Image 1 (tube, one colour):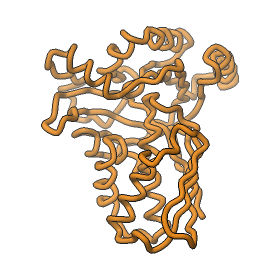
Image 2 (cartoon, rainbow, N blue to C red; image 1 turned 135 degrees about the horizontal axis):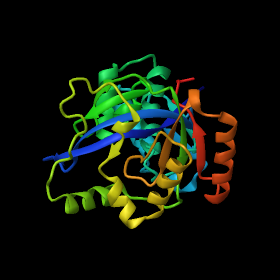
Image 3 (cartoon, rainbow, N blue to C red; image 1 turned 90 degrees about the vertical axis):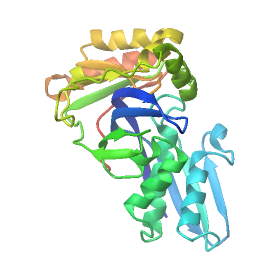
Length: 289
């Protein structure tokens, strides 16, 4: 039996570059794993087939991403029917929040199954499988904590993890459909391409809070003005920068650790948690342990 931590992510920037012929969008984004994690437990059993259990009843159906990832792995690795597997998923990452929870569960599962079966697939093969499940899944099928992603999100280049900050996340308590946001972005953008920050810069691996931008933010804010209110409150609280992650609605603020009183920041998180019914997390960059 092995236990896996499936981390959430935030998008430090997200630029939508245009439509693709496969129905997806071309993106350029920097993603960072953070230490807010679901927990996946894998156990080989003597009974054939897969058994899946989740503490969130809404995710217990047969079509969830975890089971899709497991079936795809076993089929590709020619392991189908050889032994049974019990999967237990404990959810901590909110659903439909822009934090990649479902994608992380699927990508982390692929890594875990590969480890459990003595690595029958290469990292490149895991990434290829992950891309069949979802655009963000490849990021979680590799061990790196931060990456630049292009294509529809499946082309990854590892970059340095942004460890110098506290990440204070606030979720307003509404579920946002990624498809709805991208559809509305296409309607309002008029086919204009995103204006990439630092287009003249040769090195896009460096990062500063001034780089933070999300093309989808204004779409979600228009329907859910509380997203803008949260962003403003984080900036007033002293965040170096604040941004909606992914298609939202979760907003996070970056607080530089060397100049932030951690006791005061924890107190702020507690106060905000009372306002947002516990949907507040103060965390750091994911270290993998």
